[in-house]
View (cartoon, rainbow, N blue to C red):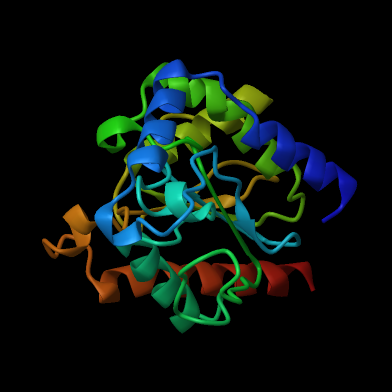
Length: 233
């Protein structure tokens, strides 16, 4: 890890701006879930994860209480992560379909994953002011990946938080509708945006988001990246 990345990660991990989230993440880490009593929970803000040269940025909502808040790696250790990484593997963005812990050998190609809120929130619902407090970290993730060609927002809140970050940077982006597999051009010189339902259990177990629907997102992203590459040539 280069010094700048280490400094960024350390600042993120030390963040205690949101008292409600700090108290909740640490309480969950102390009480644990019975199935994970032998784990030492992470219990801190969760950094992004993926390819430093990524052209595709995936943005989720927040860590899961016994997923990322336990393992310390985004979308790792819960059903949402299982659904996501299997799909990324099928599309060629991940070297393996499984993600259990930070040392399981998972690597991503051309993809970096982050979130609009870095601490696990009660009921999976961060408050607007908590997402504002986290916005500088999302903006840094954007700036640290200057070759971005595409964005994938997992859920409407992630989409709104991502667009708010770009507006804060200084880009004029209008309000955009959220619909699964919707594609938006954000403006000249900016990445395109694909919207997707979040791979939460609420969506996947009810059939609102199927594997086929999710595969469509990553195949679409892969095709758009290829088109971008061809245009550059």
